[in-house]
Each structure stands twice: as structure tokens, then as C-alpha cells.
Image 1: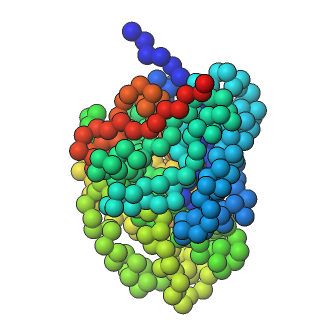
Image 2: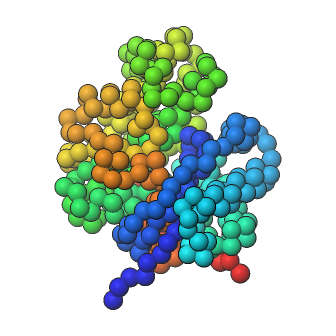
Image 3: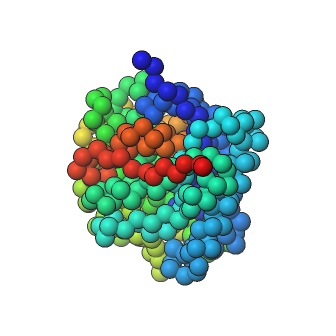
Length: 360
């Protein structure tokens, strides 16, 4: 009996706070059948500042939630226009929202975003609130994309590692058997570099890693940064964007050296993640905005023994993978399938997650 095929929009607002990644896929909840159009809809600087303030516990959470949801609804409309898809052809939206707090050891994970409002504004059924159930059952609530990574890598020579470098970086180790899945946050991704560059230059990120390329890594400082206890914790484990916040406040180095050192910090923490792998991988596939930072990628390629490839080289869109993943997870939620697992979030048994909101 053939499985039902769904056409779904996935929406992701990540820890880098760039904007909304929106992507269309068709899937049966087990496999990626095809990927459609994907686009990023960038936040304005004033709105980014509202999110930054909210993460610090300042500002009106309800009004920012409403504004964020309205921006997501506009992103859906724009994506449909760009793709030429009819709204009636879309079965479901996977709506991650934006994480403002993630402290699973305290039983806390908060993503702002009003699923009911998004459903009303778009006229499409919505699945949101993907992380709460996992955290409630003792899991880390992150990362949630590994089951999607596993679906993508079904035809690869396993084991492989899929690395996503967003604001925080996470890795999925995928073995040869269905249950051979290990995932965890490796450490900082782009967030610390972005914050440093914004503070020093007013720009929002280090485009291509060009500022870092002009700098020199402060090796003593890098050693100090790598002393953080997080790196020795046994996975599964996850990070809040704020875990490393403020570490660059006492840097007494140039803008270029700071960018180079923080890029090396991201890369070195990824290297350290290998010690937790059950077996060495055959190759690394890198997704997320951090793969565009050539300083990070050069460091990884120099120090990792296996090939390190941009995931686009396999025909995927590395900028849209997380948005696609939440479309995939939305279908799994609809079908009552698990989205988190002992090896990915540390939850005791495979766990369903997400909440379905029906358009009346």
C-alpha cells in the first residue's frame, strides 16, 4: 500500500536571527520525495533588535510574537508567489517559531510564534511547538533535524556526518542501521562571530569570512575558550544561544584577530565533537550559513581527515535544510511518528512532538 504524499511548507527562524527560511517539499514523512522552491525573507534590523531584547528578557513578548507570526504569514504568501504554487496545493505548514530561551536542564524551551494566528492568516493547517514535549519528557529538545538528515543520506556510504552551522552548530552522525543515529550541538556556530562583527563594524556578519581571513588566531585565547565544560559533556546535549554570550567582551585584540579566533573556536569545537562519534565517518556534509564562511570551512578541511563537502555538492540546498526539516517533521507529527530519539535528544524512548492546528 503506497504512502500518502504531502506538499508542505517549512518555516525556520534560526539562532542567527537573519530572517525566515521558507521551503516547499513533498514527503510521505519517511522520505524526501522532492524539494521545491526555497527562499530567505530577511528581518529588518529594528525587528532583530526586538528579538535580541526579548532573549535578554526585555520587551513585550506578546507584541513581538504577533509581529513575528505576521512576518511568517507574509513569507508564506511570498514563497507561493515565487514558486508558482497554488495555496490549495499545500497540505500543511511546519512552523518552528523563534527560540528565545532553551534551558532543557531546567525543563525550559520557549519558541515564540502563534500557530493559531498563522493558521488563520494563511488558511493552511499548521504544526508548531515541536520541542516542548521532548523537554517535558527529559530530552534536550534539540537537535530535531537528525531524522530528516537520515532520510537525506539513505543512499550514501554510511557512516557520514551532517553538520549544520547556524547561530549554534549541530552535527548528526548517521550509521548503517536505522537506529544508528547520534546528534548534538557541537558549540557556537555563527552567533558569536556575528555579534563581534556587529559590535566592531556595524555589519551583521563576516561575509565569506573575509574579515577573519585578514586576522590571526590568538591560540592562547582559543585554548581558554575551549576550556568550557560543555565540550566534555557526553551527548546528546544542546546549547542555548546565550551559553557563550559575553565571552568576547574582554577580548583585547583587533577586529580581524577576533573574527579569526571566533571562527577557529567554532571549527575547533566541531573537531572536538568527533571524539563522541561511535565510529569515524566516511565524509562530512556541511549545511547552514556557516558553510559560506571560508575561514571556518578552511579550518575544518585542514584538520579533519575525511572529505568535508558543502552539502550543495550532493544536490541539496544547504541554506534551506532546516526549513525543509520542519516541513518533514510536521508530516511526521500528522502521522503520529516520532521526531526525537534517545540518540538525538537523550529522551528515553522515541518521542512524538509538535501540535497540529486545523484551519476551520
